[in-house]
Amino acid sequence: MRTIVILLSLFLLTTSHAYGQGSFADLQAQDQEILLPFKDIWPEITPERRQHLINRAQRWSNMSPEQRQATKEHFDRFREMPPEQRQELRQRYKKFREFSPAEQQRRREGWQQLPPEKKEELRRRWHQRKLDQNNRQEESSGETKEDRRDHWRELRDLSPQEKQALREKRHKLRLESRENNTLPLDRPAE
Image (cartoon, rainbow, N blue to C red; front, top):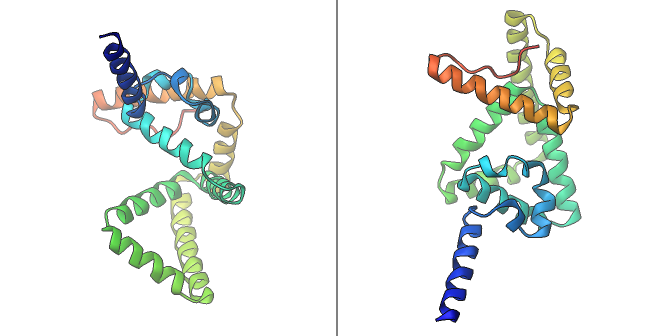
């Protein structure tokens, strides 16, 4: 009987951790190290989101140093983008993920088979389209791309506690905006 209780306890412990139900302390040491920025808010994160973060941490752990460096560079470039451009990329990625795996593979292979000149031309056209769009936005808002970048750099340089306070404030504003049927603010007031 005692053996059954021990096995059942182990099963429940592993399944709760496997589905993102466990506490931060239950994570493997290497996952804790990678997920350290989420430690303070771990109890508030949904189990699905926790599992997603755990999967990403394990994927990171399995990367070679070169893959990690390339991923870090991609992330840094993404973080430097204006919020509107990041949102568009998220939407494009979401749309891409809606394709069947076969269609995703076909599109990847199609891109890889393009000559470098054609890829560069497509990138230039996309960037020009973004510049035109940003210029139109600057004209209507009065805020320049540099202003937006400066604002996001300032936010990036905040301490973890200041970032957490801003997250909480933003979360509160979103909840209030839902209650009032207004649009949430994308950034904190200055």
